[in-house]
Length: 399
Image (cartoon, rainbow, N blue to C red; front, side, top):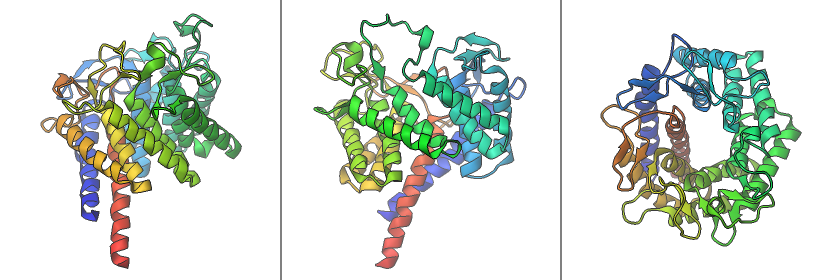
């Protein structure tokens, strides 16, 4: 078992450093105008130059994080620096809200309707401030974080399409990302603020959004946490539910709360049993909790990030609990994910498969896929398996 863990750690490490990161280094950096190209075809050719703020900030976070956590490579610092400067200059409106999209040279294209632009700005500039020591980067991070806190109860603000008061609901995406974001911001926040936000997000995710009867995470619920019988209220987003659970595991582990860790693992396993395609393999993109047809026409597609976040959650769940079901599911998901999404010819990973597991879009990046889920999952799984391999070697030595 220890040998298998070490081999897995090596697989993730080598894929990250020799395959995934070089792809983005070589093809995505806009050294002329600043920021990053995310619309890359299979070979890395740029097919559109628009810049989507949340993907820009995700890439800034990725290179800043790896500079800090893996190795202080000068090239990684330069890639982060030029992205940070481009975003700080062009990414926000006069009120400090982050746009959704810019054109190549930084002119705004899409209004700041999406709170996740602010979320990932806070994450990115927090990490960049750590590696650069720049005070202005710290200020950008804190301003974006306070935007998120201010807007969390009304994420789209004046840009929402919902008619006020008829069917109010809240989305799992907000508290789950706030939980992860707050951990990222830990070094910048007062202890009281940190603990207050983390406690509130864990309570909201595990209390309001968890369907106690089915053990699944609902994507949308009423403001008081009660279920709503409509398309949005019945929606299960397996990727979000599973990703949220490793965020919760991370927080619970820091607090030494094994009960919450096991509860999160239960949700992951329930989601896998519910959302795994028994005929073709892989996880569905969207499902209806009662088995009705989902409103999303792409419901049966297989997406890269859903499977990668599942690998992270299962590796973490197994390391923290040693539950055999996590390991059995890990092997099953690993086999499907690595055999279907990894591009052995040109590097990086495909993002979108049809239900049968065939490549649906021949791209490596676009409006929704950038330099984030693949490298982050590679790093996190590398760390989980390296820790498990080291622990097993210690046990063998003691024996």
